[in-house]
Amino acid sequence: MPNITYRPAQAVDLEQTYHVFVTASNNLSAAHNFPERPRSSPPPHRSMAFRHYALNNDGQRFWLAEAQYEIVGFGVGILHDHVCYLAALHVLPTHQGQGIGQALLEHCMGLGNPPAARLWTTIADSLNPISNAIYARFGMVGWTPLIPIGGAVRKGSMEVGSAFADSAQVTRDNPYHLAGLAAVDQQVLGFNRNSEHQLWLNQPDLLPYHFGDPADPLGYVYLSSDGAIGPLAVRDAKHVEPALAFCLALAHANQIESVSIKLPGLCQTGVRYLVNYGLHFSRPLLILSSEPFGQMDRYATSGGDAFF
Image (cartoon, rainbow, N blue to C red):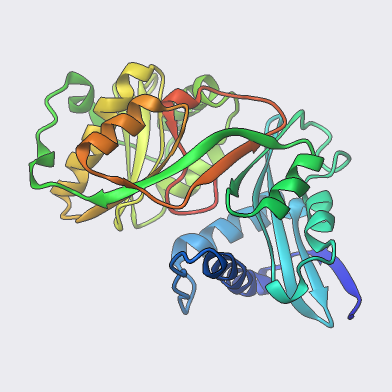
């Protein structure tokens, strides 16, 4: 068995971590008869943008595992104020069961690594009990399901008919708009992540919108050109349904034929609305956390990358 070494990631490593992710993910999918993820070459733009962000903003929490100079696993932790989020942890099937995942987790999110962190969280696959047991030993346990929902956009989806949806405006990357997004995140999630908003606002495939006054918005949403909705956050849970209706109308107006979104199980209003609309559940996920945080009844996680 080759010796496993660990080191921080560098820019030259980023594309290979994408291939480790696809290989590990598809191995789990095949074991449970789920469709495999297509492997893109070059990797998708959003996937690489996430990796460059993690390297440039949280490089001390982006770690690799190597065997004979081959990358066999990687982990990415991201610190938001007091919350440390494990954005990725993947090990090649040929090297699983050797303690690599545990070691990467300790490098990325060890208690001595981010001294400001008081809460640890991640999004995990419900089909992977071995990894979830590792997270549990670290203090992150199942808090709420994260439900992927998707399907076709109906032709009648343009008619929203609510003052909330009518207040939607395109969000810009400027201090005025970013301050408003930060206020929403602070209320809904409990932490600031404006550096991620700046990344999202500059992605060519994302449509960013806020609702109401940009300095003090009622919420925000992102919709990608391939129909991925999220993140979505609204200050009041009563606005979940009109925000989703706006997303469906926006998708229809942009000739997007199908949409997908990941909603916490605690967001029952949103789940019921989309199921009644005709969308369907897919492979279940879990939000694991060392303690509950935020208001997940009015939130949807990022739709097209590994951010929360």
